[in-house]
Length: 150
Image 1 (tube, rainbow, N blue to C red):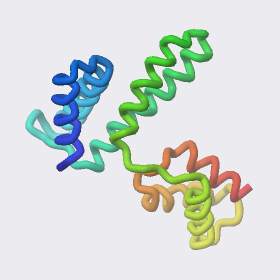
Image 2 (cartoon, rainbow, N blue to C red):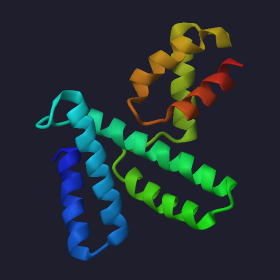
Image 3 (cartoon, rainbow, N blue to C red):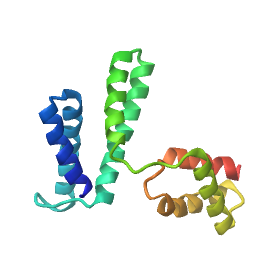
């Protein structure tokens, strides 16, 4: 079952269960996936799982930014709504790395490339992007690389 098929199935389940919050998030996600597919190659296009994961990551990032903005603006009720949406979206992402696993992978990559300073951070990040394959966000990855190179 592809990621999009799983989302469609969960959308139908949310309709049957009359789960309005989950239904709204899944409809928004399905719309974002369809829009991305149309951008890619027309109305009948389908995204593969890697492309669908990228769209979901983008939606997750938007929610995280919204939560931060709402909390700074003193709107805890809106931040709570965004957190609920974020939790639903994260169920469709691959399991992320914990801090120890991430530190180990970053250390190994730095060792493989022989990087010794922050000037080589770009090369390390590029190599890591292929290794983590969407299981860690860029901000977390960048912070860990800076910590180990600095």
